[in-house]
Amino acid sequence: MIVGTWSPASQGAESASEELLVSFDQSRTHRVLILPALFDEANTLRRFTLSVMRALDASGVDSALPDLAGMNESLVPMRDQSLTRWRTQLGGLVESFGATQVLAMRGGAMLAPASLPGWRYAALDGPKLLATLLRARVVNAREAGRSETREALLEEGRVMGLRLAGWDFGAKMVCELENEQLAPASSHRAIDQSRLGGPGLWLRAEPDEDEDQARALADIVIADIGDAADPSS
Image (cartoon, rainbow, N blue to C red):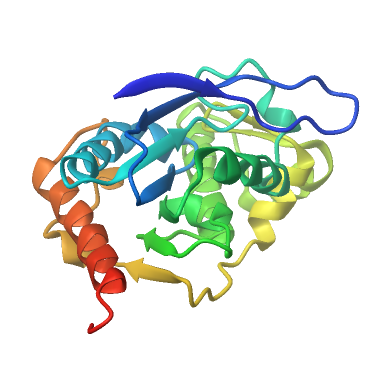
């Protein structure tokens, strides 16, 4: 496993940032870009995601997992980020890593480039992700003796941005999440959680791991790669 960095393309007058990049890279034929789950689920699924990458590596497949600007150890503000900006930045990584496929986890499916074949694991669209974050804020406010509603929070967020689950979202991110449906992509195969043999780890209260589920997900990816490489399949 290599822990390095990647540099998302700068936009406008801003300076380029440097973000973490975890990879298994031996310059092999198949090179999978891993797009992480977003926000709280990124933490919940981190160990699981790395286990999937180790299983891919053991089967002869390279992979790379980027931190997105504004997340994890990033020094740039989350408030300045948006789905559109992340997609543009990831375009450069697809080229520099030489990605041949993409595996998008949960909300990361919204960032998966249609130009790459690949997989969407338990894909989550923007409205569902945003609804989960808003629900958590409303519940926390109630427990603290405050009254907040989803509708009022959304109205504020569309104009001023919003703090949800510890993340400072700008207005553009809020608006994009509210409207970002997953477009059909014939190049991306859906992988439902039911194929992994247990409930999704994002449902657990604390970050956890499950080697059996990680191996099952990696096996699906590896089998699909093998089928695509076999002209008789």
